[in-house]
Image 1 (cartoon, rainbow, N blue to C red):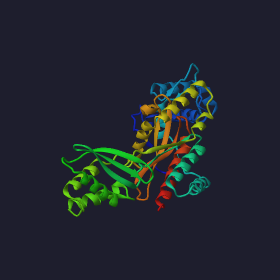
Image 2 (cartoon, rainbow, N blue to C red; image 1 turned 90 degrees about the vertical axis):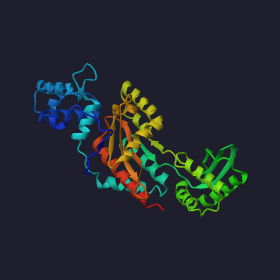
Image 3 (cartoon, helix red, strand yellow; image 1 turned 180 degrees about the horizontal axis):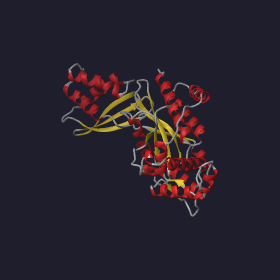
Image 4 (cartoon, helix red, strand yellow; image 1 turned 90 degrees about the horizontal axis):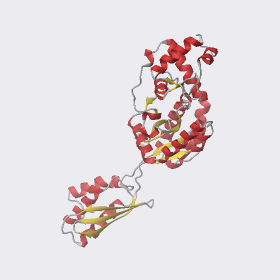
Length: 364
């Protein structure tokens, strides 16, 4: 994968990686690499023993400079340092080396997803479960807005200039809407409008039938009298944004328990608990992930760059996927602690999103 992953929200970093000296970059990279591997602070003496060709004193001076820049911090009284969230962002944007998945890994991902069947929900559920297992994080996916075909439409008068529209989807969902109606509608107009729409919209989504119905009315080809036509137009004008008329996207999360497998300290456990709370606030999480549908490629959200993860200090790596018309309809990826293995997970998420898009494009 040659494209560099995009920042989650394009935050302003305290410095550019090119503004650091080669010595500072080497030490900074070593500290971040160690943190992503162990989650523990690392000191100057250990860095010197690991191949940094400087004395511990010289390394400490560089670490102090990086701390002043806001890229490193000392988690407690020890001499060791770990990257700040700003430091992780700088590393991801400027130093992260993202390669391609091995052919064996690619074949494994393709085989697992292809075996899940052609149903969209099956493909997406299997993909999130698979990503969770491969990344040891929680897998997540935002699914497209549901827009089932209609099974029944009915207008019920409520009083002067008000009516209830009942819409039943072929998947069993029911939506009731109160609309404003023209003054003086007789009972026959509600019956006529119900019969007209039931004949034209049964088995079709609202969006599929809306243009045709409105065009018929505009061109006076509809088999309706004037008042019933106004009622139908009023109903169509009000529909949309609900479960049936273009519902909200939904969120699938798999593998939260994996986030507990590498928890060693009480502080880490508390952050994971907070992350679980963040995930439960699904509407906020969906709103964040919807931002990822604004462009192609992998996007990375780190910690307090978003209000949602300001307490849990978590990272999200996601990539959009497309439908049969090659339109971006959702995002898929993983969520976990900020010290996840970005170099491995970024290409994994990117490739999985591409496989999902290909499978969905083959659906009939």
